[in-house]
Image 1 (cartoon, rainbow, N blue to C red):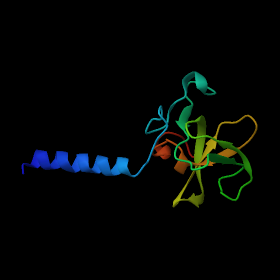
Image 2 (cartoon, rainbow, N blue to C red):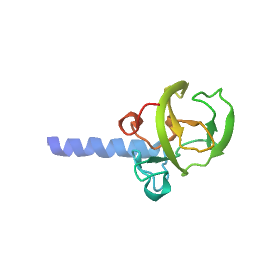
Image 3 (cartoon, helix red, strand yellow):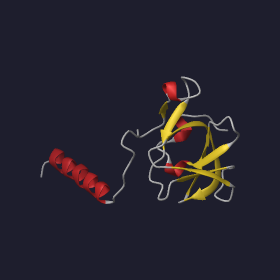
Image 4 (cartoon, one colour):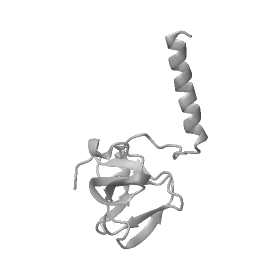
Length: 125
């Protein structure tokens, strides 16, 4: 088997295995955070989509699954991310996103956002 053919087979097999896991993303979701444009508080703001949250994503008062729940966001909801911080672990991942909100601090687990590597796009809180 030629090397190029073998590489194509590995890539195709990997893609098939990934799709077979049932992972789904919001239709308009990007793989990384993106500029909010007119949706955000300013043109430079970064946004992401909620994705893969089994029963919606709980927005909390702090970066912890023990912090007070405030409300829930459905998968596919666009959110503006102000900054990131560490907090309690969600599925082995301890990065939390602070959402833009004039009503006060609002946090969600970055595990359920389409931010990719959030530390590359937004500042640490």
